[in-house]
Length: 401
Image 1: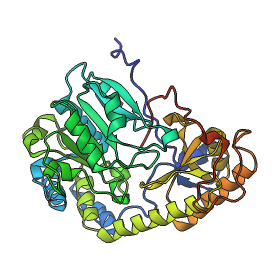
Image 2: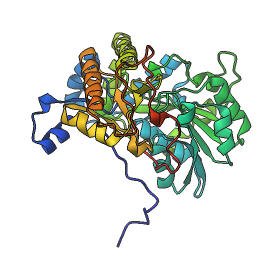
Image 3: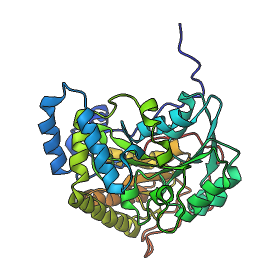
Image 4: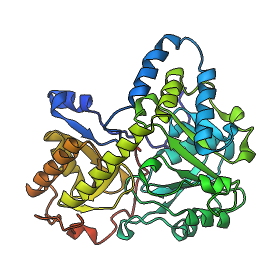
């Protein structure tokens, strides 16, 4: 026999790790830094490492108590009821739970392009289909209600990403509210805030709970993760916060014990370590400012822990940077063949990345259409000939967070 027809499904393309690249090139892993997957340059909080070690002896038991403790802690952090927190095996696990709870066969979801591939992947796993709204490079990937509503055609789920990956743009809560108000009663608006800790914006939980002048809504959900600011990407831990009206759905759609004992205990420790998160955000802010000021390329203003840059031939630039020991993200897979994405690293990592990028561009790897800027202008946004138009007429569905 054969599996069902998967021709409409897109394989998930994750960023490459240091060990993988070093083996391929026959080099010492110590020669490389990786700024490609938006991971925390400081790693997990020290308290989370202790929790991981302390939990190791107890992994023979299912994580029922730890699961409940972390759920309660997250609920307390956001001042919501514990039944509104859907703990999952990463943010993508929470996406699956929402798909299970909402989608019927042949329902559509509306997703941003460029954007996170798993929105569409999850819909297709659950026998749905995918439509896109375009965030245009020509408009600096601006997000607003008009852009989404112009593309909307009755989809059951509308995904918003704030901050958006790979551009770093955000969407105002007033626009989220307008989208929720103008879409059908049976449409769920999901706001993915995987990078929310790095942004100077309020969470869309205000719309769910009726805070900050908004009326409470039962058609908005929020996604959060422990992978980014908390540094627990390898443990796969995330969650959704849903309206109170959805209280009894979680038990019917969740995968039993999907969040492991180690993950739950590490998450609980990390959640309590505000100092580590503050340090991570401070490092990110400094790195963004440094890249914007020093990179000799067009840099988009970002509220994530990464920046998007226009470099001409992204594949050639990323490959040469990798050869020189700096692994960054080629955004061709996002439908942006002239852009790379650089994760905000430590001070030393960020300086090395910018120095390497500028040298690669000076050596002509951006291609004939890239106009090298010998001195980036004061705000770091040196223009290039390739900035004039949006090149994503036929975008593929794309890759990782």
